[in-house]
Image (cartoon, rainbow, N blue to C red; front, side, top):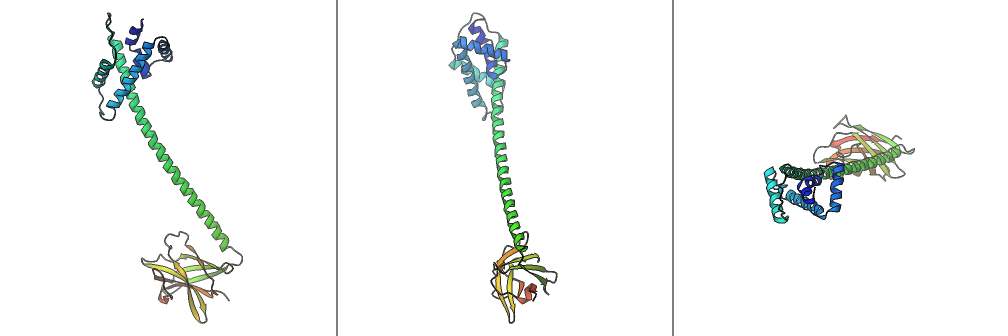
Length: 267
């Protein structure tokens, strides 16, 4: 078989499409090494297929055999050198070549689609990874804060004061943990109802004789604090603690009609 007959056989199209066996691929490769015209034909086929894929992929979703055949024939007519042969071409080999080209074009389209899908999956995995990393960091921070809080509440010299519910809400209860050394009081307000819109709880330090209230501050993050334990500064010589419900922003003096809990230190 001479070189031109080999080129016309359609085996080069199958080679480009990746449809040959390992032995056949080796045969084509050896022919390319021996005959530069075979190499040129392989390059021409690859160029035509890539050009065809660009033209028909995104714009024309419906790809017919006639469309591809027409474009390849036009490409061959414009770019390839026509050599007249005395012996007519074998139609079977020719159509096999076109079929291989179609397979290659379809394969390229499938590869592009798979690449896009893979990139999308990678982005999704990366987003999920960042979410879980942030979640783990948040959990670790919460655990560290909880450990610090437990250590403070279990300190040897901390003073515990139960705060009982009052007339406005008898079911209410709370507890104060006062660390006089660090001037810190921890208020466990788990037993208080959620304040209505526009209202906040306000903590008070009290001296009893005469009765003198001193504000320790408002509990502005009551809703968002899940464990309902709040840390406040208290440098007063407190004899009792109380919790009232006040307008947002707090009050200069406690609204006694809205006193929810009250408790005194044991003498």
